Length: 416
View 1 (cartoon, rainbow, N blue to C red):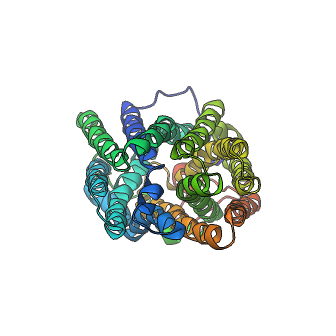
View 2 (view 1 turned 90 degrees about the vertical axis):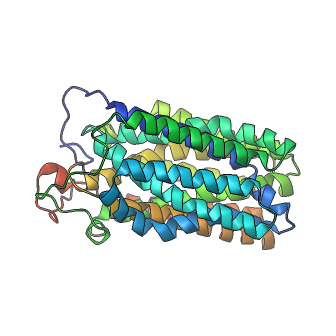
View 3 (view 1 turned 45 degrees about the horizontal axis):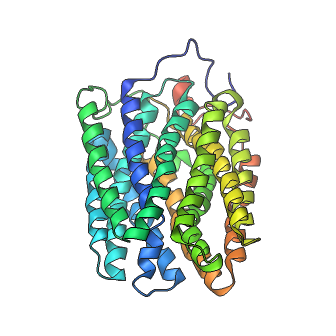
């Protein structure tokens, strides 16, 4: 048995075409999100609010994601991943279009937050579907492709968003809304021809993986800590604080914030390409640990030396760390769920951990930046990733009982 808990696989099976359809959709979503990223905190500050309030806008979407996540996990099993996915895309499209016409900070905060409902709908459903379709023994590779599709879209998005900000602060939101409508049409049209992506058939021989059952597994608990760190340092602080750091501490134009975010995405994508399927071969834990170490170092160094060169190098290092971390931790959770049972609640719980980090991170780091300094803000954020790394170092990776045919609750103890 391999270190990550799956049996040795035979000849490499071709990935289902539905997986590629989801990858195309995630690329379009990420491209639009990248366009908005440099504009969001700057647009918030245009209403006369401070750094902390501007960073809070980044937290609005994950707040609603967090509140809606428990319900979305149950809805996936009832209405099917396809319906949830497409409906979620349309909700975010409407929310983003509304942001473009916001006339006050409160309106921007509310419109951005409502998009979190749609975000959790398509995130949980896509995560559930893509791992159900993934061939056994290749979940790490599929997780890397799924993450990479988001990042490939994100490579072009921030630079374009930084350029659009220079023209009109509202333009990036219009572009993102259009990208989401296109994603809905593309993915919906492709998946309409599939008979395998509707409501998951019930398997009476395998119990669903509830959050309470998942929490008994040490790997799931470790994934929650690294998910929190990912939400804090990679998703929250990177988007919420880097544009403000560029504007306030470095005194540079918003275009440089877009370039820094693009450098992060390039490092992330390059690492994904270089290490595709690495956690399938070497185990989840060592790959997650290495990724967390790079994220911690790259994030903590951002505020130590306020220069453009350090910002770009640190962004590249942190991005490469994220490229190692995210596919491996996602695949570790998918190992526990398996392909024969419903894991919507456990998947939504994993998403909730990331959302908590994305909510608390920009708020805490924004307050530290405003009252103590950017060095403290980025240092604490790097420390969160370091704590998660220590948790993974002391965690074993037991086999997934559902995939091995073992009774639920029997856990192996093999270390990664």
